[in-house]
Length: 182
Image (cartoon, rainbow, N blue to C red; front, top):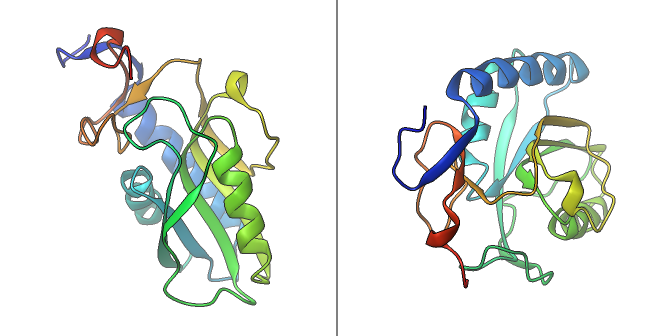
């Protein structure tokens, strides 16, 4: 049942998110047993995912943030990636886990991965809540994916359209008439 007037359909429910994130947290915790990974959230969309993921993890960890932009107020990536906020601390020798909200074309994540690998982390892995494989233009190695979704414009659970809808507790498809022409 859709509970928001701007949402055409719910792709991933609140319950599905909770269950899958717990499974991801268990798998990630097992992979980092004996390590203290740095969870690197890509702002702003991944904040909600990061928060739930880190609370569900059983290993100690640190967090940091980067902000990138390739969308602006558009619904499709421009392909040009800009770093709006860089890390607070060096990552050389650290086990870094990029926490991403969605992988679309792959350009942003590929750029970010290259930038971070040049900083000599002990390891670099990626977890993404959502993946749109039909939109992929750049193949990026992703260690954990929450959900593969169709090529639909989604919002909620941290994902936005023009800074709206991040607070929705589910992943929903935005009604096309609300963004057509962007």
